[in-house]
Amino acid sequence: MVRTDSPDIASRRTMPHVRQWFALAASLVGLWVIGLGVLSLLTANPVTLNRDQILEATDVLTAVVEDVEVGRVGVDKSWKNAVRDEQLTLINLRETKPASRQRLLIPVTLTSKGWQITPSKLPHEPPLVYPATEESERQLRHLLKAGRLP
Image 1: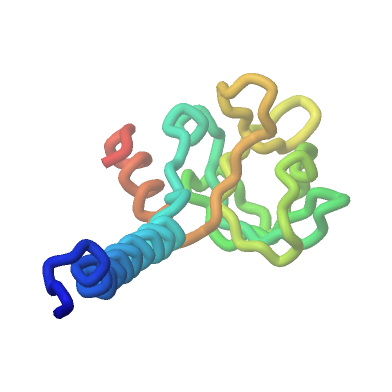
Image 2: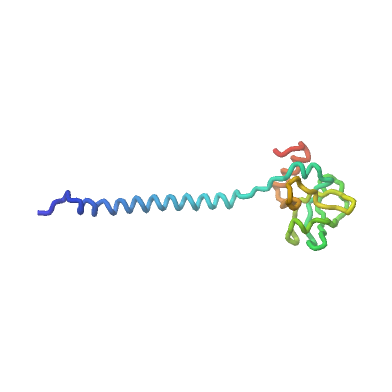
């Protein structure tokens, strides 16, 4: 007679259940990690304009980088109406390492040496420029109107 309550038989019956629960738990953890990864890719690094830099700038331009080495940009829009030129040479554009033909929001200041990107108050950092997106332009409109971010 074979005993059905022996540890060997009981463990053989429960092992498939344990493996199934473990597989389910591992699958749920895997889906959770994938979901977090997708969420971080879709929401990572939102653009936030530097309030002080924007407000201290002589003007803010929506411009397209034409020549990185020379520092030349094509001006699409002057947000404070201080720049009237269609092209502008920025003496410190190379520091921002922009891509050619990239469309940017660029805070600029007129100095004795010429136009330059307005420095931010971040120590030992290149001046900040921003991708010209709907969100960054919305923030800029709000900053110029209210003097602060929403």
